[in-house]
Image 1 (cartoon, one colour):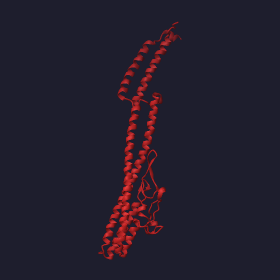
Image 2: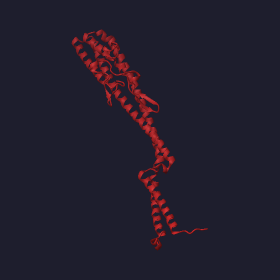
Image 3: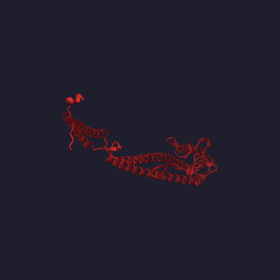
Image 4: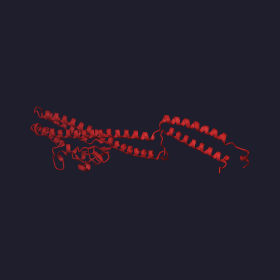
Length: 306
């Protein structure tokens, strides 16, 4: 049996078609405004899961990149201080060689010793350098490694407790600080007495200049200074290798970021040219549906009598 098609059925069917046309137009309009073809999970559940995965990976990469950039800044600041210390040591060596030639008066040696003391103070100042509010060479101790009140005695910590690391990848951390106290030492008044390291050597050289001990200057003093300088140079090389590794990590992270960003764009971003065409087509279809619906569903006298 074939039922009668009523005016109400025609009207409802027409409204449903208009509603569907409007929804398609609304979705396309949202794509145009956001530039994305997936704006909510119902648009594409599988695509949304990929978007969430890519965004999670990019978030992790951004965190690693921040650690790498901070580590690079730390090592570059440390390298600057080590370079300045190396230049000071070279000047100290020039003064030592000059004082050891035996041609200087005691007054000259006193003046040279005064300059050497100033150079030693400059080294201590470099050792107290900071980056982002943290001392570069005190390990994890939150205080200046060398303080006036304690002379040349190191006030930071050392060993594994002093290690400062940055996470540059999954389960991959890299030490970014160096133990400068292994080069400078504690001077001549350390807990165990003279240690033969740089500060001890410089203080001894100054003392020998003031006493006119030329033999010591040309012998043990100069030898110890060269040994300390070589240790400092090795530390500079080690820190340079750390900087190079951080740069490699940065390049790798940027490469992964670009790859993940491209995948995310392919899944999420809308083809704007095609979307604009779809919008124009759907807008014309919607307007035509409205016009056709107005012609099909017309009011009658019975509608007003109900």
